[in-house]
Length: 263
Image (cartoon, rainbow, N blue to C red; front, side, top):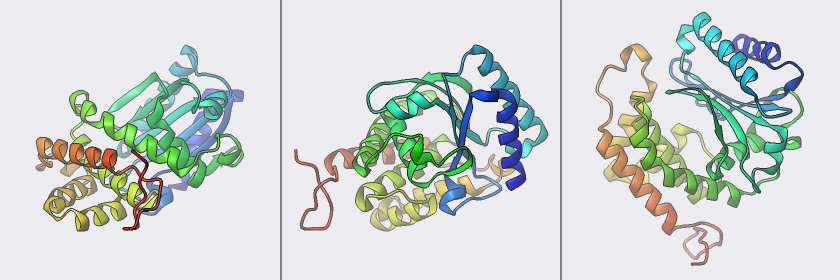
């Protein structure tokens, strides 16, 4: 894995030159539940200015070449490219963003509130592969900023069901919902496996779906022709979780140990 990461960083240096300000690793490689057969490589790439069309073309060539050299990692690099200004001002305004992720080709988009979830995790837990510590380039965030972003992301999740044809999306959404529920209860991020086990214990009626989602995500791509969790039931669980997050907005300690926002 270290060899792959060094190769990616070298490719980014070549594609971005002096525009490259930092590369930060986060996700399962940092949280300790990385599966070399199925997990993604999660990266935040800080650039000195917004990626222009020429930069976008060079990054496309980089990712295409990496996938050809390492076919097992095709569609398993999740990278976000954001300017230093965007990383400092995301709480005040949107900024141009370039993203490649499983099921999505490299494309230009813009930041929105849900992305604060990623920036918070990188700031608190990200490992610099190049550049200074993440805390020096990403604006300060609180756990409440993170939880508000989690809720915003979960509110969008049903819409993503309509637009994502990726066969792995329903399982991803179920595990994401588990992590969101865990975060609001425990006020911290968790690994996928930890959150799934926690959610299955507290929602036994959904434990079979959670187990199916985890199992499907563990399979290698060659095995993913097997039965995936039912899309409709995955969506039902996501909607249930999102609704629960809106009702239980953690900020203030209540007698049962949870934190709740004033209504």
